[in-house]
Image (cartoon, rainbow, N blue to C red):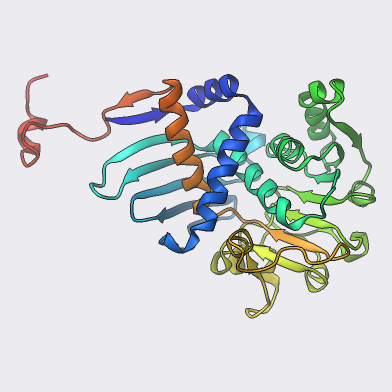
Length: 343
C-alpha cells in the first residue's frame, strides 16, 4: 500500500509539529542530500509552456529511492480563484519500483523553497545579517520570512509588493510574530526603499516576463540576493548588470542556464553550484563587501529531500492514509484474473 498525504494531512502535520521544526527537518535533509550530490541521477526538468504558464515534471533518483514532482506556474491563476503554483509528488523504492508515498506538494513546495533559501543564506550571507527586504508578498512570502527568521536570525523585514493587498495579507499573517517582538516589519513604497539598508534581499515575484525588479544602483556592497522569481525561460527579476558585479550560486547549472537569472548571460558565465559550497569543495562568501546571488529556480533534489522527510514524519505521527494505488494480487502475473475477480 502507498501512504497518501493530502493537503489536510500536511496542514495537520504542520500544526502538530510547528513551522520551525518542519522547516528545520526539511533543511537538515536538504543539507544531507546536497552534500551527497554526486550520488544522484539528475536532469533538468521537463517543461511544457503555454502563453498562460508552464507545467513541469521534475525527476531525480539516488539508487535507493526515486522521486518526481508535477508542478505548474500560472501567474494569472489567482484571478480564477486558483493558486499560482500547484503540485504533487511521488517517492518510490528503486529496488522494486513500488510507490511508497503520494503527497501534495503545493504547501510543501513553499516549505522546501523557504528552507533552501535559508540554507543558501547560511553560507552566502554576511554573518550577523538581521534585516531582509522581501520584494513580492504573495504565497511564498510568509514562508520565506519565517524560514529566515528561524534558521538565519533575521529580525527585521522591509516589504514591498505592487499589489498593496498582498502586503496587507502578509502583515495580517505575520502579526503574531510582530506582537511577540520576534520580528519587525516595515511596509515600503517601492522596491528601492525596501532594499535600502537591508543585508539580504529576497525577490519572489510571479509575473512571467523579463522584469527589472532590482537594478544595479539599488545594490550595496555586502548584500546577499535570494532571487526566486526567475524560474523559467523568459522570466527574470534582476538587472543583468547586477550579475556582473556579484558571485552567483545556483542549484543545477544546466537547468539554471535555461531558466534562471543567468539565462541572460553567456553560456560560460561563471557560476558555482550550491552543493560544492555545502560539501566544502568551493568557497561561499569570501569578503564582507562581496555581493552574492543565489539564483534559485527550484531543483528536484529539494523535492526529494522534502518527500523523504514527509514520509518519515507522517509515519511517525501516524498521519495520512493507505492508498491502493497498485493492485495487490495473489498471483502477480494474473492481472486479468484480479481485474475480473468478484468484488
